[in-house]
Length: 276
Length: 348
Image (spheres, rainbow over the protein chains, first blue to last red):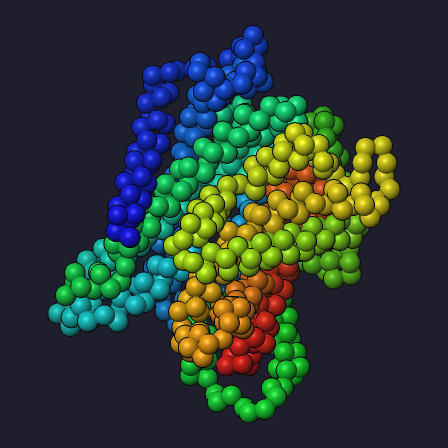
């Protein structure tokens, strides 16, 4: 059991590292013009020269996947950070306010969760189209709910712990308790939520792009690539569709694996042992 | 807040009365309470929708006037604004929309050139059909594979099934749909690639419907399977290690009776009650699958409305989706109380 866990940890770390290295260095080492077409080499099946084949205007699918993953990751990370900041702020404020304010905030969270995320995202993008920012905003604005719930619960449970009581009876101000004692304890949870949110945000970005509501169509995002490849797919050429999808799945699984390890490390029992 | 997301209130609840439980009264009262609670939620959601539209650069007058809006005089535009009923502040327009909606008037769709109510009436049935069949596929596949995986936890089959589940969970449904089209419509040429009828005909026949429904429903189902399968596997595997199962085995009952009579019943219970709370994911899946397969349902209309910035249709469909989610939550709670006698509907 432990051996498989170790394998899982190293695979996840390795894959995440590979993804980060690829999206940072491949565009530096192989700079390509995203608009460039090469009709002489269009729709070539995977080969040694083009491991993932070429698309309907002769662009290398592997290279384009890396570029697409870079855009998708950027959008995903920014949106995940935004939603984590919103969620942490709302959750902490709600827990700190308590009473009526807390109930009101939680009602608002309930209202938000009764609209499917993707639909809400579609609505926001439809109203503010087109561009990168509406996508980031729409994904960020629709994904802070779970973080807010987690942070609120965490703050509420921390507030009744002895060390907080000790700090208060020691004469610490509310601000000092919040900054010195609550924030460091909540940060790992918020960080975990942010990491878990990245694949989710990427998923949403690709879905919006696929529906034609996401990033501008000339940008190589993974959702745009799958949308572009629909015509060639019907003609029987599968590679421009298959590989961008795999590029969505692999980082998601790697990040989820990494987050799972992190979750085990910050699980409550272990942490309370460390604190005592 | 749905009860399904928190622990059952059973432990500290009132003693369960002996004999038959009275079902209809408490169920009706819970439904009534939820209907009342839905009113402010719907009001808040639609108000938010109008607020976002008011804050956005979208202008219905420019959209209506099209290219002419650039050259028309300010007076003409103001007159048009008044005629379209969009000259007031947005809370006023929201209230106008709400009062209209109560009488069945949801405005006109600019993208589909029909009254919104008619769009919903024509398309809702197809979406419900697709979602129902897709969900049934997910339930059957999830239960069969989940139970099979749970019987030998850590075995070859279990590891295959769980790995594939995680991969499927990460895979976008539209991508699965496109690969399905490639395999079944392009390579094998056994199923149509999309739509509701064959090219050149508008008549919907039973056989034609079945062949056009098969692939979208399968893809929607497969995209919903991982969640369901992993829950079933967990529930049944845990149940197989509990005392009642050990007792049943000790009494020499057959593996079949143990599995279906004991483990499946207690293992599936928590999952079945969560079914209603999956409505948001089902809607998300339908949005993508209907678009991939040009299915003439409500979800593909949503995407069309968004592409054309069709505010009336988007507002109505957002409200409709909210209603569906709330109804799903209610269904989940009703099933929960029905399946688990320790749970009292009165406390939800």
